[in-house]
Image (cartoon, rainbow, N blue to C red; front, side, top):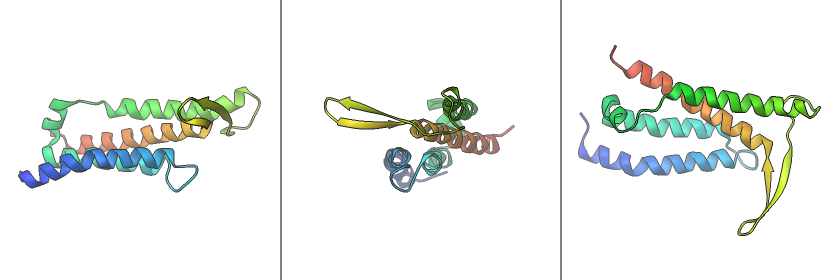
Length: 138
């Protein structure tokens, strides 16, 4: 059983941790961070909810299938790597596209960002699948 203070603080902290994990994900190639550490931060936020509120309560609110997050991330990361081979380059060769957006100006879209998103989903899916599996009573 947890206290009201623990529940209130965790409800306030989880959105901040998730936003921080997303900022780590997208800053990965310019600054320290990336898909792995961003995924670990996201998984820690959801794990905090599981610990404070319990698995049954969290599953009654939302019931994600973390193994599907893992599979989709692995597929995205793999397709990013093999996509370069379709154009005659080495596996995981990075490429970019310059796009001009009205409010943001010129931005560089990197293929490595897709790979990082795949790693992000793999880490989230694997950590939370294991965490949820070990916490369930069966």
